[in-house]
Image (cartoon, rainbow, N blue to C red; front, side, top):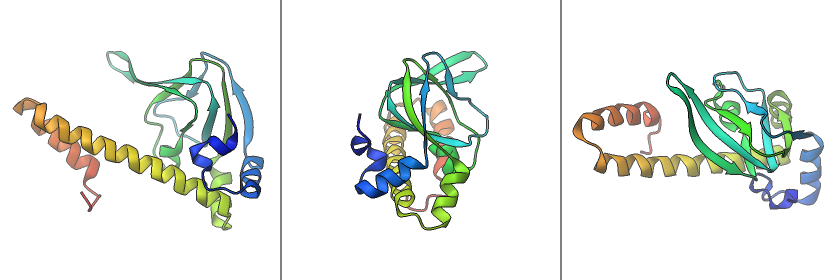
Length: 168
């Protein structure tokens, strides 16, 4: 895949794209290697250009699959924005080709007013907002289908999730 086709790089001109990519490290991750570790502190963003990854949780009853994602995708962005530990595990199902940029490098670029980094951040924020919107729709759907005993649990989770979002 070409960098121009990657949604995170949307709206970058050629010079900005080259500038941003030059700040990243190009890596190949072999199939079976863990890319992100649940509950560990993230320190870099992965722009997955090629390959498939498995997103899963470690739970008291074993591993629970959340999703299988085919490139292009971004990993580690939630930890970058939130400062919280990684919320899930990610493992390469196939060989993965990616760009990585350390959080501190990206923050420094943002602090110095780098336009390319700002555009990439805006693109990632838009993707996160779309996922939050999809989650809101799913919560709404679950409200209409859950038994009463599960409804209060769902309401509490929703309140915790969306409590700071005044627009909901």
